[in-house]
View 1 (cartoon, rainbow, N blue to C red):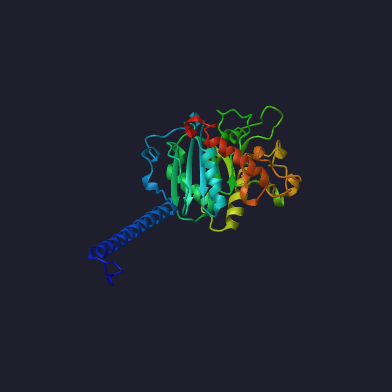
View 2 (tube, rainbow, N blue to C red; view 1 turned 60 degrees about the horizontal axis):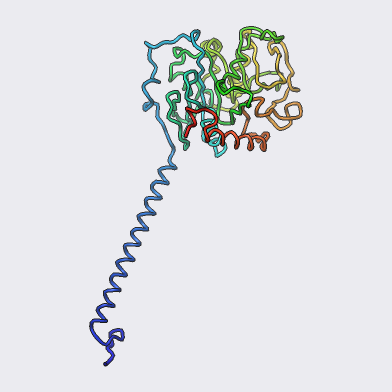
Length: 351
């Protein structure tokens, strides 16, 4: 049999079979390439979508949050608490702080509502709960402007709230000690310090209308630090109606002097005392006393009588100052693990 020059085949059939195999190979390679491109496109599309800022506009919130003039509640007949959280996604630390708060500090219950004010883009997902409201605004006016925005939006005067908790995303918490019963919400640890007179056990430094994690006595101006502050209806009404403390602050200097420091100074001048979770300032009457903690800001390393406040003492920690980093890391891991396994609150964390 003679050899044909067409690829060495001796007959036309072999040559045709070769050509068919080549064509089908090209088709298969083309289909395989298209499949890979499709998979890559879908991956990039959904990954990009997931990375987009998760804006939630105030126009899309649930109707039950819409202010209603016909549904005015008197705070004196309630013990409800409003938690107002202002969030700015400055970096991964701030994002982790918010996520920790959502996992550990947010529970679906009737006596506590949460309003989270987003100042700019946010990539954190929020729980769908009837007592959680998320608002979005431009990143302006800093924390005090964000808190005021949230208060005005919900119509806070007629909501029946007795207590108000304000915080920002520079803190991490709550870290609730085991000896606190599960039925007690972490906000109660702060609100129970607000009172009209002495506590009946020797602390005659009331009335106390403003409470926080710690008190900064720098420059002989004792003041509750505004990364977390707690007050009641009467004091908040005074601050909003009689002062310009809870208003837009354009600069950090304004936020510190006309916001944080003025917050305490105005209430002290009105005859009300301030307090904190820090044990060292228990019983102090800041209306007449000065010089606590050697006039230092306790939220720096070694600036709280040579140590730093423990996470279970102040319930929250100033996370952006790297205070007690190992303790914060360990207790954060434990709290998140327990929260996500459903060991805190059955309604919130059940899987």
